[in-house]
Image (cartoon, rainbow, N blue to C red; front, side, top):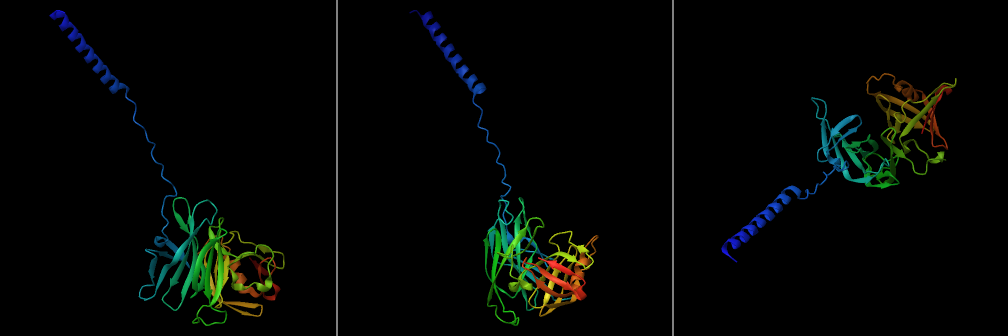
Length: 315
């Protein structure tokens, strides 16, 4: 093979290699597969932390902003009084509103600097993007908390209290259990009496067994008054002879005395906020006119008015 033919073949081979390399480079640059696209992660709406120790709670119309489980509210200027609210023990977790997420039940204890320590039940409700505390339900003064658990979708508070006629200085030795129920309509909590939905035994019922909801007031002429806002009108009668009541506007408190089945309310005081259209006046008349009481097999507390002038029904 002569020299010119060899040169031609080598030249052709070189051109072929260059063309092949160029094609490969062109293909890689223009036809390479697209990178894998990863969808952005969607935040979990329930992925927030419930920290019961750093929330705000309302106890007896006073707001406490807890930090690390404690809040101290100073009294009026020029006084040494203060109230200390704190978390007691560990929360109990459950689904109290049956919406599929997790809520929490807690103990709160309020020390106002005197001899009393007042215990309350509160539920922290999961609202989807935050937690909202319910109203604080009074459990007792200087009781001895024992346990907190969840049964049948309700928070169950177990504690010891004093016997009915014991002085406040006595050690609490009588066991008591309170089932706390969350009302989805009102967003509030109250006591649920187990196995008390239908018939009840009036002989076993007591004034202090639960927080009572006002159902109606009926007068002899046939006039009947019912609360327009369900579960806003409640009364709790404590064994120390004091009572506290809530209305659709203000809170009320005072004393009561029971002799046999007669009852007298006295020394009533309350907050003085004005609320348009409030039924507070009709509710207060119950305590001003009440003369006696009795229970029914439907689980009702009935107050009868002086001179047979009417009755008020609570449940």
